[in-house]
Length: 102
Image (cartoon, rainbow, N blue to C red; front, side):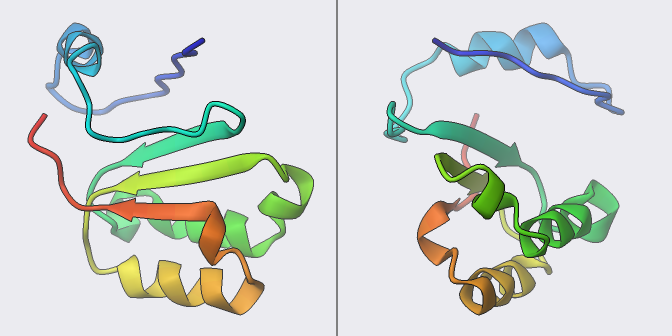
């Protein structure tokens, strides 16, 4: 079962296009036994990814032990993400994927 949560997208992107593209075949294999969280975008403070790093460092994976995060994109904060995950021992809980065409 896929649940959609789209919160406050400030862009000229059509949300229906996003949903339609999400129905296209995908090369990412999700572990159906886990709660999979997908983050998409440039890894930068302007896009809110600094807040995500802060949340990870506050024990999010201790509270949600069954969660796995997929990060699709690249950017200046990637090393900070990797460093935070290494520091707290959660490297196996996050999968980094490079930018995708759709």
